[in-house]
Length: 257
Image (cartoon, rainbow, N blue to C red; front, side):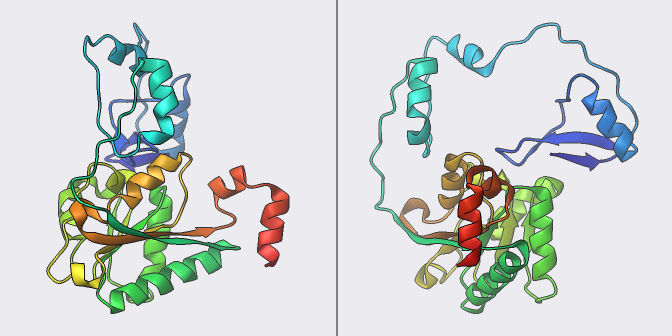
């Protein structure tokens, strides 16, 4: 994925949702995209040296990290870095409640369900973080909420300059925030006055990511520091990730239910 901004093509990191302005594709792909989008052509880059992240980090004499989603990659951390995963007890008991997964047969039903769910939560003034995988999907959901007269904010790579303001308001009563994976890491959403009594922030994941830990990072935006919160998945059966990882016979069977 990429974003055209100020006449230049910027690659979007799928796992973080952020642009990487200092990176470009190799073998002429960058220039092909620039021609497609009508941007000024950049020169090809010559690689003088390269190193993987794994080898770079391994050169440190002392290496460690902290993350809330290490269990899925514990075997990889041991294999690559020789590091074990140690669980640190929570400072406060978790009050983040799982609300399950709902799957709809097609994009239209899926979009209608997202609008209905966001509308119901906004009516009771509970803030909602509606998570999508791509910039295009975030804008598509925004386009569905607008005719329903549901006021909302969009946080994606296109709105990166106002990220702090959007995140700062996401926990206020009645707020709907549509966000890509930009909001999934290192984001502490503070609850507004009276929101805790309403159940706290509610996270709706509208598209699964390729890596389950990215979904868990998004779930972790709710229920911070012992606050109440909740999360759920509302998915479409014809979503790209669902199609890639669900057998055709199972998708056909689910569509007929």
